[in-house]
Amino acid sequence: MQQQQPVGQHSYPDQPAPQPDTALHETTFICDSATALRLSRAAALIAWRLPLRWGILLALPVFLLTRNTIHWLADGTDSAPSEICGSFFAVLAIELVLVGILTAVRMNRPAANIKAYSYSGARMSARYTPDAMELSLVTQPLTHRYREIRKIVTTEDAVYVQPADANGYVLPRELVPDSALALLRSAQAWTPVRPS
Image (cartoon, rainbow, N blue to C red):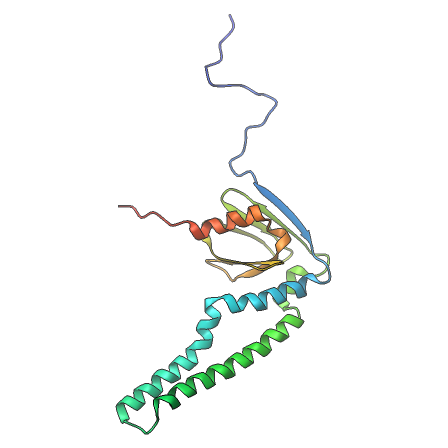
């Protein structure tokens, strides 16, 4: 007597069951002689878009402004408020010039930490699963869950990735197609639900 298959279940012996961690996207990029410089330039420009850079730049001028204002209010010195503000902007201007020179140097000379994984001939690959980005660089393999990525910054030819528990790094834009970028940015829109 033939056994009946339960309704709603089908048997396909020739097809393997789908795996829950199947990659949605996989990309590979082979670096050329210009990749390290290209990524260094992108990193130098992206740094200006990061709040940390501006926090560091403003720390000393704000400290001096606060200290001079407190002295002026407490001691009643002859310093006018315009002089106090002038010292703030003078220090900030000096810092901006110095950081601008450093940016120009970085844009014309590949950074050592970037060159370590993007020298000519180096192979990079990325695998995007439903939950995480898995990178294979010559320096080390990296895995970041989308929810643990704190910041994503894109330029025309590079993507800056800032995980919550590691230093940020730059990748070639070719390694992060638009569909993968949407997965990475899903972390920015995700808000944890607190139990009531």
